Image 1 (cartoon, rainbow, N blue to C red):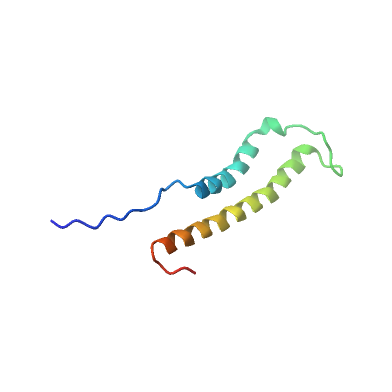
Image 2: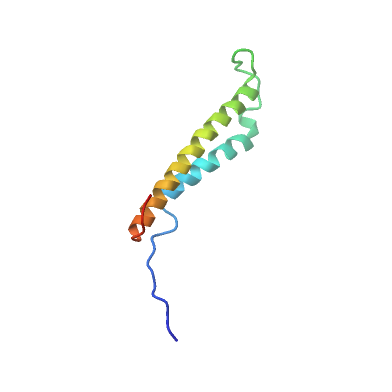
Length: 88
């Protein structure tokens, strides 16, 4: 019986992947913790806190998703280059 050569891959959980996970989980935690924003004050341009806080998180979520995507691309390029593959 022949055995396939063992390939030594890096750890699955790396610091970059932890940052990616935090970027993707933060908006969920912020929105599920309703007690932190279930109030009307402070009012900004006539919009109660409850509403503008959630809309602010739409923008923050977009930025965090972009950061996570760019970090993921960089991580994949680094892993590909370390394996000897062609990088984009």
